[in-house]
Length: 222
Length: 363
Ligand SMILES: Nc1ncnc2c1ncn2[C@@H]1O[C@H](COP(=O)(O)OP(=O)(O)O)[C@@H](O)[C@H]1O
Ligand SMILES: [Mg+2]
Image 1 (cartoon, protein in one colour):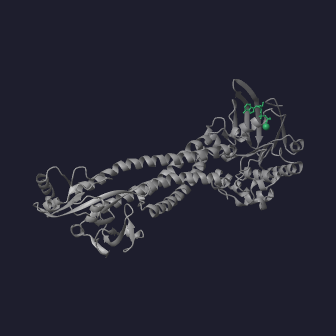
Image 2 (spheres, helix red, strand yellow; image 1 turned 180 degrees about the vertical axis):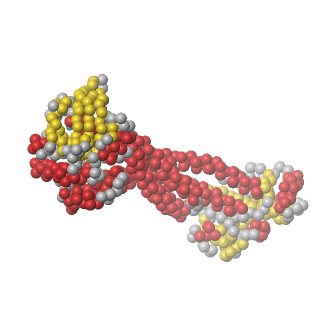
């Protein structure tokens, strides 16, 4: 199995005024293609910071990240954006759909930014069927339940076949029933499309469903 | 519906409408002012150029743009007719009087026979003015609800009867007999100026010199130079127009800038999402510019419509003439679109430079 993501000795220090806040203190990590990895740890231990670094939303203070053969840390700001566009799908705790667009509109926007149009209508249809969204496509986010919104966000994240999906507490805003449903969908995406996923979660049952669990504490992987 | 541009505008209809109207006002202002300047100077040109006399003979100071007096003795008419090279001469009183709230209007007193013969002016309906209570008017004035036989106030309370309609347009739109106007102004035997037509237009300068030698102390102007004066007043006007256009552009730019600025502040998190999805700076600036251009474009359409409606209304109410030209319409269009694009650029660039993580955390 090929390594799709490799992070070496990642350090991240936030500067707040004159105070340095170390958030990551040397994290190394390797993820294989098709893996479903859970990241756990107490609040403030640096999980989100790590995810943002892996997705190129932040630059590390030191260390190196290679995604699907491309060095994220050596890249310019524009190049990092480009790698993100082609290789990464984000899912957030608060869904982050565009409220003025329908579910369909949110998906199309992702496709337009990616620039591939609907290059594989079969896959698109299959994703929507799997996420049970076919009859929700003409609704706006506010007309959908939290679980449905997160499923739309998930569809948006995977519609362009990213190398890796990065999810930051995707079930954090959902009730138990919807959490289970969304988790099931993550698993199915992983099973059916061999989608690589890194998911931050506080939910031990969610973590149990993953192939690997990474525990973090105080900016370290333990 | 998968365009954030259009859905954004629909999300905030009031703000969108205000922005559109802001741009529209700038555009309409440019159209109305240039249309008015154009219409009025064209109208003036047309009416002046129907004078076929080459020389205008006056007393110094008797004729300014908006005031005139009848201080020239009409005995000069006979004397001028005897000057070598002169074909005909006809006396005119031009009298300016306040009209409406702001306006100034003018009326002329003429000796109809010699005046109409010299300038090839025909009565197309009715008959020439006769006696102290009759007036003839041109077709433009007749169209404003003044048919032959109707009565008309010109200045003061006196009512004149429309005796006829003449064409082509020349000078003041209403013409009385010389005697009638002399009487009203208590200036018997006087006029404002005398039109002089020469036998051979090529000799007009020589004839003008001869007149000057024979009747020193009077003012002798060539008609073509009076036209040139009208022409010359236009560059000053065009500087005014340019200033106006610049102001309109600034207003459009500011309106769009403000609209885009608030839009972007409000949508900070959405910009963060776009960035997380891998949207480039160019893409984000492009989306915001498209929104601004759409606002500006709608503003343009509304502005043109506004200018058309306002121009028509003002014309009906005051008789001011608007002539909308392609050149100025294109300028106004460019101003509206460019103003919008430039106004949006700063907020767009700021949005494109937002830190994605901070934008995503924005409440
Ligand atoms: N933008 C920031 N500026 C300063 N400190 C930050 C910033 N973001 C996170 N931190 C700090 O970095 C540490 C790790 O935060 P985070 O990665 O959000 O942890 P987690 O996701 O595990 O809760 C925390 O101490 C947090 O206060
Ligand atoms: Mg976090």
